Image (cartoon, rainbow, N blue to C red):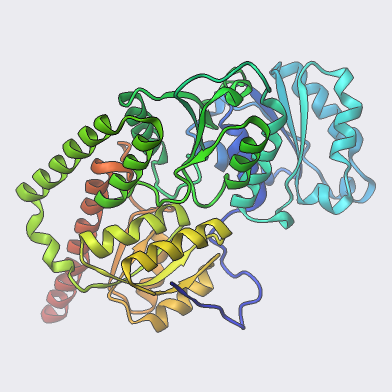
Length: 448
């Protein structure tokens, strides 16, 4: 079990690591290929929405986003007429089958009735209007994703029968891998090899037609421990689609990948094909390490490491670091605190026989405080944790997750067997650079 760390002097967020609910909602809408988005907000919120579209790598020519550009007078006097005009204009210009009308903090403050405006405007436009209230007061980006998922439910049609041996993949973007779409590609490639069809990815490059038919899948696979769980349970209730594999860590490292694949194979009755995937994958990893990197693993032995990540990657990394690289996870800093991730984390730590301190919904202040007291040798996280590690005297920091300082030209998965090698390669290079910098510093001092 874990020992949860809390800080009485941190009742309010300082240096938050996650964006607001608006970015989470936009991340869901951006994953649907043929819809438009109207945000009822000052112009600055458009940058938050743009960041969500960036996560899907959608260029500006394909973004169908309108903003009402609220000013001080609009906040004081009200802006319903401005919103109605924007809905008409967006419907005329974008000509999409559905339009998400999203209220932000400003709309919350002035009490704008987004639902009422959409009901009034629906007969006047061709697009189906879908209201969402997503002010930052309503939570962080993970909670915003859940708001976005909830808004998708009315678009999924009931009936039509089930498509045998097919799945929906849910929330692939709720993942701190800088190229999370590479993880999605690994999952899709693996499912295709096993003869399991993909009904819909909810949502990434998803058409409205695919979304409408999502209720015909025979199972849902959630690729996040940070968002999408409530949506998957609602789909189970409304459409009779079971959520599978949700009690397991994601496939990060050798053992977690094998566990995840075997559970998948058992559910769909493709155990023999799964064992082929596992055998070939483990052989590739061991062969690569034997030729190029096996000798480096002993240097990590008993390295006390802090892991700062989202729950999706953080929970998956623990077993890999502890059992496969022989590090000691001495502190866990998770960016979210959903109840289901707490349960999975507790079971995982119990099975490993370790009980490190854990901070849930960690912000920058809490991370700094925890690292000061943890006595760790290294930190695995993002560029953010690298800076904090330097300020607290920790010399080794692995820049693996979002936000990263690394230039990335080629997508690199973290899920699966090649994904393990990708993580290990980053760790190895950051380890070398940490000690190389020390040597350079010593040489400079000697020359002075």
